[in-house]
Amino acid sequence: MTSRPNLTRTIPILPVAAIADGATIQARSTSGRFTRWRWALVWLTQLAYYGTPWLSFNGRQAVLFDLQADRFFLFGAVLYPQDLIYLAGLLVLSALLLFFVTTLAGRLWCGFACPQTVYTQLFQWIEHRFEGDRQARLRLDRSPWTAHKLARRGGKHLAWALLALWTGFTLVGYFTPIRDLALAVPGQLGPWEAFWVLFYGLATYGNAGFLRESVCQHMCPYGRFQGSLMDANTLYVAYDERRGEPRASRPRGSDPGQQGSGACVDCTLCVQVCPVGIDIRQGLQAACISCGLCIDACNKVMDQMRAPRGLIRMASERERSGPQTQGLGWRGHFARRRVQVYGGLLLLGTGLLVASFAERPTLRVNALRDRGVLTRQIEHGAVENVYRLQVMNALERPRDLRIRVYGIDGLQLTSDDTLHLPPAGAAQHSVTVRVDAAQAQALAGRVVPIWFGVGDVEASAAVVELAETRSTLLLPR
Ligand code: SF4
Ligand code: SF4
Image (cartoon, rainbow, N blue to C red):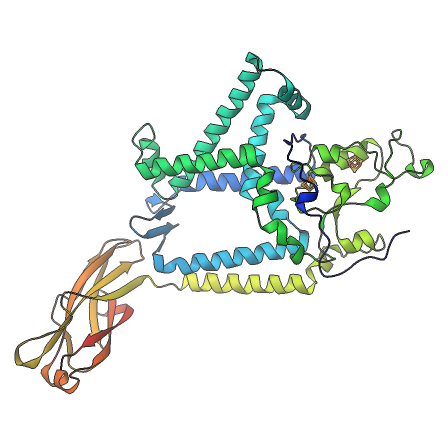
């Protein structure tokens, strides 16, 4: 008899240690809806990754993180280190999106878009091309080292190495103009570029070629806390044990009920295709990355047995444990409070981030005191302080700027108050601020706040779009 469903806030997940046996996993390939989705995501993410640095915008690389110049170019937007707050916002939104998706449908990120999974899938595809499917690879594993084995293994590793190096090269191409990098590759790469191409290439080679699912099982923290994000209504890849058990083989098209068996024919195909080498029939496990390949494999078996599909399917704990019709449907899933809270925060956060990014300043200024000349008295009792202004142009056009100083009466700039900045350029500009004798006497011995403003000088000579920064004025006794 089916026990009463446990619909607590989180659902039980078998720990990794219970299923990992350390053996090399040779997953069998399969086909079906989830396999197609996985390849669609591989194409989408990898076209974006490998293709983006080759795009141009306004005559320069569209996405370039120029660390040497402290400038980031993003399709015409020029960002400075002060804009890293947007990156922080993006990371917060990414975490919220992960929570939202996990609450809805478990580890979809892991199975479909995580770089570890995606590169493992690409490396496995290469392996399949050189060494064949699961049985052929197992045979090759056991066979002695012959010229045939050497050629297949060598070809695979060469292809892996090339893909890994291309991946490393592409990563560096986000930080150094990729066309210059490509011209330098034959042997003129700088030491840092060469280091990062090799380092990231090696990391890709090791992670996707050898470590594979071990990274998900033993290094990634997400698998460990996924349970706290899931509840009884969260969809995950689940085996329908009420329909499948007891397992037994049977003739095609036969009715399992008449034989006293369940729908599962114990073919183990769902285990053979699993990239992390687990048996989903034992229940949800921390190592399961929700790739859905076992669903594809089992659906094919059910088709061959002329039985209904869905012995393994996306199902919630409520659906598995309660009456068969208790699934919420997609509308019901989005109506759940937890999903709505994450979704609402996601929408709100996205709106705020987009609005603040659109309104970000296109001119920035910082004032630094000149440490060599803190304050000096000049003729007739006037006092001068010297500053260095760092002015940053976040537009892709040159700008003529004027500097102003204000905060107390009697202030004036005695140095050049004009500045020309090239497109997306930054400059340090030394300025001298003088306070007249009467004010210097009235404020003697005090440190008073002042402000520097920098604005565009338009054709009408008006100064517009002021960027402002605060500093202090030292007045000797
Ligand atoms: S159990 Fe199924 S969904 Fe989970 S990792 Fe294995 S094949 Fe993918
Ligand atoms: S693929 Fe389906 S029928 Fe075959 S062992 Fe797995 S659950 Fe049973």
